[in-house]
Length: 242
Image: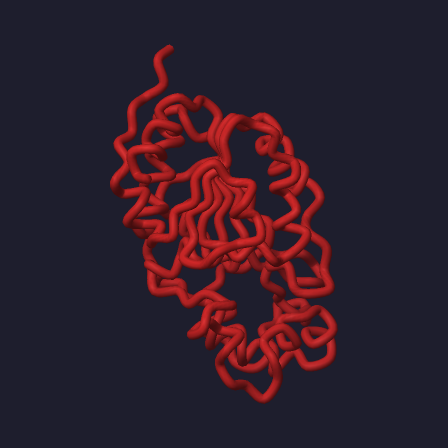
């Protein structure tokens, strides 16, 4: 299977990688929906409720208590998958990364064109005056993090009940429509509207790399049920001939 993936990558010039939480598990960041994922842990209220816009508005202190404990792995480092994708981009084979993750690990690894569908913990702004804050400000604060103007400092992450950023969505769709190879990895493909982006792909080959089966397995040219870092680290990157 690795040989087949290598062959597809070698003959492609516009690869788009679409990734979910499974891409970052090898960096020590737990995913959401697997058996030992965040959504299967016990909390007073479900994580889906805590990470919603209405909960943020009604119970901001409880929201930030959960957010600091579970959503700010600032010390995490890129794994083999992140590094290989950055290498593919530098070699002129990968157009962009479309990610559902908010951890910023693709950029840490050196990727330049990254469409963060669900935002990023690394960007935070005062809801009143718009002043920018580093994630450490939220992590080290107590209670509700506030700007000097009194406004709440909110992470630029897309909460449940919020819409995706239209410009990010448009950029991701543009690249997916132009791609000749799409590699989808580490996602259950059950979260919409993100998962629906696969319908915009009309290129030659679709590859799925995921621990478990997905609703799109039947549409793929190649399905690999292995760890993403192990699969991608076996790929040799050759620059595109000019």
